Image (tube, rainbow, N blue to C red; front, side, top):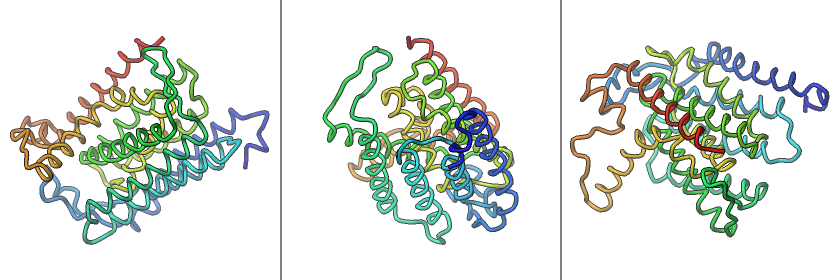
Length: 319
């Protein structure tokens, strides 16, 4: 690892890693975009036809660069963070092969794969961090049985993967919200100091996403696809586990409402034959664009501002 050569200058090493995450992502997206599969458009999504023909599945490039950056530039005393990279790559690959498939994968297959990855991450996290749950708003720490912690962590990780994935339907929206949420957990950690070891990885993620936004701001030319959105959801869940899992709710509330309401709506109708929110189009970003007449730019900006404002309020409440 490079950090063996920079033991007295770790700040410089981390800075080089952040530069690598940004520049490497931007350069690779430029050079390799023509090798990515093309989006086929989405028949039922608002403006879905506009995405047809764009390079899709850029997450395979983004997560590969991120993993290399973490392994090369971020110090690790054990296998914890390399293993996290492994699960990020696994989530990326399942998403990419779905993106590249001419026929979308079965939803149950994707759900089962997400569940397996969630179990692996939850078990790994518990092994290295124990089963303490920090409730920062209450200044309380609760230790639960490891089997219960792993079950709860699996639920959080699986939910995060899927709500973030569902939000990836407007140019710049998923990346912008992810940056705000990741930086929110970063600021939380600076305030509490609970999980400072994850901070360099968080900043590397932000730099990667900023590079991606160079190509994904409206009108976009490249889409991250499931190969990017699924690992993003996994990483956001990891940040919540490292700090306070309950704070996933306010720190990712826009993700939850935008992507989660659609999952609830479809699940209730499919399994219980219960129809709700008949007059609300899901994901919510489609509702505001189609029913309320918001532009893509207005949707991204307003969703992101609401999420940022909520995170600031919550951070002000934590001692």
